[in-house]
Amino acid sequence: MRRRDLIKLIPATPWAGALLAGIFPWSQSRAGSVQGGTTARKRNLFKELNIRTFINAAGTLTYMTGCLMQDEVVETISSTSKDFCMLDEVQDKVGERIAKMVHAEAATVTSGAFSALTMGLAGLLTGMDLKRVEQLPHLAGTGMKSEVICQKSHDERYNHAFLNTGCTMVLVETVDELENAINEKTALMHFLNIASNHGNIQHEEWVALGKKFNVPTSIDIAADIPPASNLWKFNEMGFDFVCVSGGKAIRGPQSAGLLMGKKHIISAARLNAPPRGFNIARGHKVNKEEILGMYVALEKYLATDHDLEWKSWETGIAQIENVIKRIPGITTEVFIPELGNITPTLTIAWDPRQIKLTGKALRENLRNGNPSIEAGFEGLPLYANQAGSDSIDPAIAETLPGKDLVNITVWMMKPGEEKIVARRLHEEFTKASV
Image (cartoon, rainbow, N blue to C red):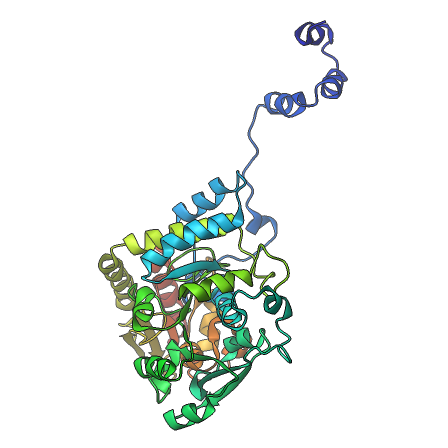
């Protein structure tokens, strides 16, 4: 009997569908989709799980989930999730394209800038020696180098990425101290771009000293885009590897970053990373969706009209400033951070004799309002140069210097949100005015 004839014999009873599914399992999903007659309702998991969402007036901070990905990036992640491919091939092809974009010999997508630091150093320590790869982070008796030199002012919490390899940090302040610190154990000379105005040795001299003593140099520029030119500036300057976050201004996946630099370092770094499972970076996994999403994000970022984008930020800041600066007791100033998060930023201060409000109270009122708004504050960028405020606990941040000022940025806002922020600030300042 043909399948079609058998189906005709099955009566339209409640058990018919179950019988059909038992005979032809493939029919169950089709029957369900037809009988249902409707598509599944789109879930709002933020509401379902009672997770607060907010307008981001603070910037690309990890504890605030970084950035919002561009639609093209989200579509890339969705569409590439429907097929299998070989992970190494994705990294090969994407890395080749990215390297050309950033003027580097090679590049690879990592699970963030922190991961890039660990992987870059691991590559230097092991080279292409599989036995050494398996031994990290246990350096004793292996013949591998074990020290990373950086300026004292550049030693911040993210340098823990280097400690993960088993290495120790050696801190210096002058050229003489640096030259005396270099020895047979020295694996790397590391530079922190956002702290460059605090150190005695600047970028070019750091690279030159590395070349003089045949010691590789690295630089962390995690949050130092824009300008877009920073993506290739330090590769062209001669740093052996450069690390950047993908989930900030580039607006790629928050769990992605870039390691770019000399080809032999990147190749060895990848040997220390997935899909291989015998290495220290196995837990730094990025799947095909994130790798390809990072590629599309970078492609789109470099194609952006950055002059037009900058003007839109200035316009948004001006709209907020114009609404509140006429309130008695309010002082405003627009500034541009020198080294990281380089976007127009509005600092708002007030006379406590005329406005009975603390910075902490203002931020809490904005946070607890509808819609919720997260504002920045003066202490945060000050602290960033010393200890990496990107992941600072907000409760700790409230105790930092400058806590009675607020900073506002618009670069992570959706269109029109600057008007909401201006209105809410005006409401809070007016309500607190004496």
